[in-house]
Image (cartoon, rainbow, N blue to C red; front, side, top):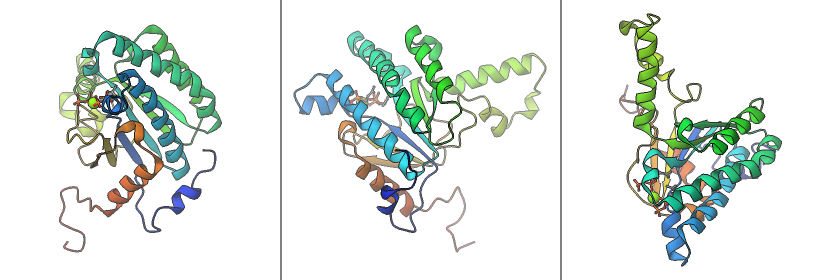
Length: 252
Ligand code: IPE
Ligand code: IPE
Ligand code: MG
């Protein structure tokens, strides 16, 4: 994980366009567990190993930002033991991985309504952010108690307060100003969204930021996701022509 651009980049075609920001909807843990006759929690534990593999691969590939969707605001509707198990798992994984993140120059940020998370998890999110703040390698953005609509509401509230205080005039509100109130305003928008598990939906993921992201849905369940799947998704991304509303290249 320490050397950027090592053997993994060699596995991509030389002219491959590598996305700066990859965002992953880590889905399929429950189905994986069911297939293996295990509990849903076992599926989430195995999903953690996939997350570790992908973080490591992204660091090696020299990816700038990796966003991982770990828990949505809607996921509180799951049975209490699963919700509590997920909170404990996220906290434990962060405690256990902190040293590896520091050693590998990863900067950690968390996005979501963290004030509603258990106190001990909030503390660990703060600690890992603080202890990795000086790192300048891969940025790992973990989405916990995250909802795309909730984020837009939170940004709107924050902006409305500035308007109320007289610091911002409604006429000055544009996309750039608005985006400055999102949870992680300094991160570029995702270029590539990967959804393992096969569902063709976004499930309230980064709704503002993904206006022009390329979506790659893969049948593989998240616990089975490897660096090879990541490379496959990057190659698929590289084969797409991003137009941003313009006519195809060469037809201008
Ligand atoms: C994703 O896996 C993990 C979370 C949403 C926390 P799921 O638990 O949604 O797995 P499936 O979709 O039921 O297979
Ligand atoms: C999306 O997966 C949320 C995360 C991966 C954290 P879900 O399993 O919650 O999404 P739906 O319910 O299938 O839309
Ligand atoms: Mg799911």
